[in-house]
Image (tube, rainbow, N blue to C red; front, top):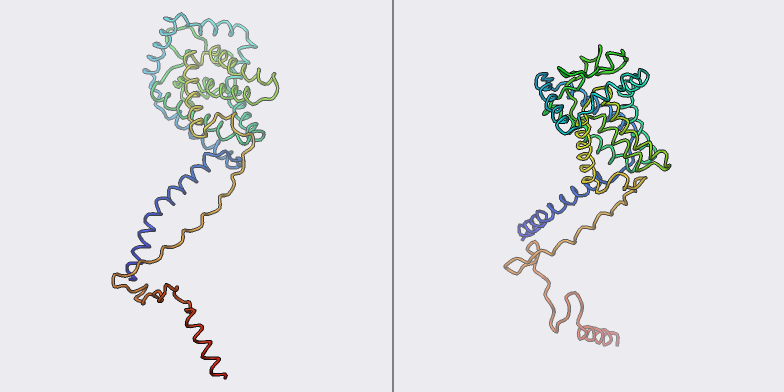
Length: 333
């Protein structure tokens, strides 16, 4: 009998364990997919480490100069065949205005980082419930861009052979750009496609447009990626097709964020909603052990049988009660 009871309990545990495991996994995934208030030190370390890894991988991609120049010729020919090869005209026109082109050189070298970090900080402080979804879109955009640098190395217009693009950083000796001058050896010069200046600036612009409370801020949000497009073309760092590549990368990042969180960042609650703790379910009562084939009870004990007249076990029959009382009365007499 004891062996039968043990087997019954083991079978019940084997049946319940997959359900418990699936419930636990679903609970963990549910917590990960629910917006939570970000922790500042974790975010600082995550962003710093992520950008370091991004820069390391981007600069470790083989430069493949000949392939990059050949791809540049193809892109330039494709744009001209469409009648949209306007980059050289814009480059020469803006370069003729010294203060404007120098400003654009510094814009290209610095604002790319300042604005992105600034928007992340704003989200962290003012929209913590939307921060994680927006950050995921940004990170996914950047990861896809790394694949583009490897699969399609591309020389920027300023490095093309046989054209008349002006390297504005070299001409005006602008300080701080990783694209030209003494710092060019620290960066992969043949990673123009896709343009993360466009990918990141469009991410910033859309976030500002969707979440800013004042109309002028929304307008500035939309103008920022437009200004960035003008800058990357004027400084001969990108073709306009590179900007299209950056937009496609951002589209993937936003789609991934939507698939994970179930909504676009601006549709999520501004402040994370605390998840109510679900009380643990009470364990199901254990089933009574089955009697042994020989009719004995648990652990070999004889089961208590029903008494004559259908009286339940453990309860004295009324006839016996009356007989006992009569005997007691007779004894006292």
